Length: 351
Image (cartoon, rainbow, N blue to C red; front, side, top):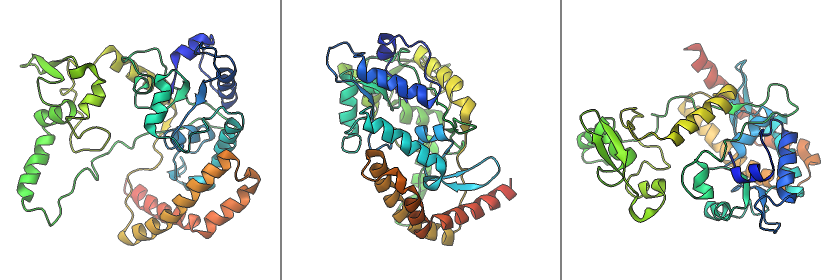
């Protein structure tokens, strides 16, 4: 999540919100004080695409450390959508919705439509891989990373940390593959320096060239056509927005790190790392457990997403929370907790 730095400056904000109430007051000012300076009430304090791009971040303000399944520091597994923290999250977003601080096109717009609002300098707070992907322009340090904010719940905020392993599920060889040996040679290549460079930066001479080949130091070249570097990179490598086999080797990016990269690392270490906890480790369920969980979660996820939108927009009053939780339990939410608790306990016993 990122703040539009121009809006912060226009409103004289020198310290980012640290609580949900401070965040609310800031978004309210965006709505009322014309920070883009065009004389029109066209500012959108907070925008999203079906909440998928902000849910994980905002849930942590109420101590919920995972969109569906998470384990607390005592080793107890939780199903997020039936937690009190989830109700706090819904209550806050409903408040923003009612006061038009949350974009009313959140549940109907595409990612491209949201980005268009950013490039039109209408967005104050938004989610993207980097801020300039939404706001346009070149990479810079004027649009700060959002500091997770605390609610009335003790121990907040929390932030979902990556479990540190992403090798599972990056590739598979099926029995239909006529040349498994050749496939393995190709995958092996992706874990080499040359292969990782190809998948991360494309072929030599397009986006980069060697400055010192012997020491593997590269430098960027101008982007063909002058378009966004990441957007162009996505046209020449599949390692763009999806998980691919390979390694994150410092040698691969040697010479290509910029002041922006250093700034991103600094922002992350200062604002996210102190609150970061792994929601749930890479734990495997048995085949039988996985089949049961998949069946239950298929219906549960559909119901939760429908009710989330209804609660946020007010189509369903939050006074019906108890009925909603009762329905989740009827659909097997407590059984989901049992299945994941058993798998987690097995995993923990082997650490």
